[in-house]
Amino acid sequence: MVISNTEDTKLFRQKSKTITQQIIEKITSYIRNGEIAPGDKLPSEKELRERFDVGRSSIREALHALVALGILESQAGKGYYVRQDYSLPIDNSVIFDLVLEEEDFFDMVEVREVIEKQIGVLAIQRSTDEDIERVRHAVNEMNRALERGDDLIYYTTQVHVELARASHNSTAVRIMELLLPMIVSKAKQAHIPPDRDVREHERLARAFFVGDTEKMKHEVEEHLEYLRERFAEVRSKEAETD
Image (tube, rainbow, N blue to C red; front, side, top):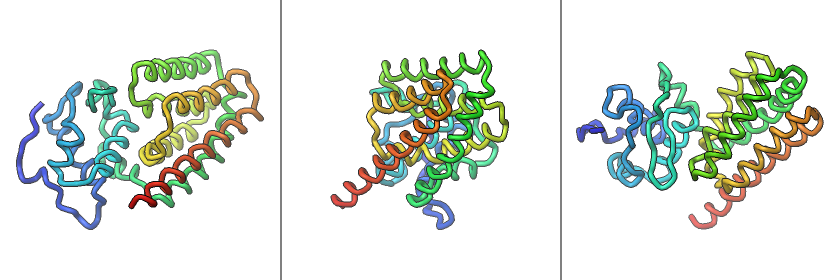
């Protein structure tokens, strides 16, 4: 992998785009033009900060958004790599929408709670043996990722997506595929411990497996309330140190 060291690697601070969006645009342009190929490792966070002359939080949010979309993957202790099976959206604006303001994050979580409760109920009512197996596979892959020490974003997201698919409602699937990446890059700032993150998603899956609709709705509430509390707590601590 060779990234050209030209002036256009510096960000232009366009007023119409956030710094994070500009970083995303640069990284996806490297992938589109072949400077970074499937399986290639990206420069380190430090190298990216120096190349783009930006802060750590902007770099991390851009990387998290790209992981959430399945374009990049994080390998513990090694860094970020382009996934072998990645797929780039035709329009980068799809990715830019992942970068939420803080108030938007809480609004989206609120909407997600309403939607996921109904998705969970429909999944329990309509799921087939194949659906159950797909959810089980997603949970197993999530646990394997935990054992490897991988970033869990992609794997926890898949649990939610497979539950949506089990609802056999195509609109629900599209909504979840849109909402989850939009929330996930910001949710990473909550710094949820990996083992707790896995337990949260295992509880959702368990409610689905036992076919308990009331338990499913309760687990969705608990899961998203924990996410809100963690995010608010971390942001409060960060504000105190600023």
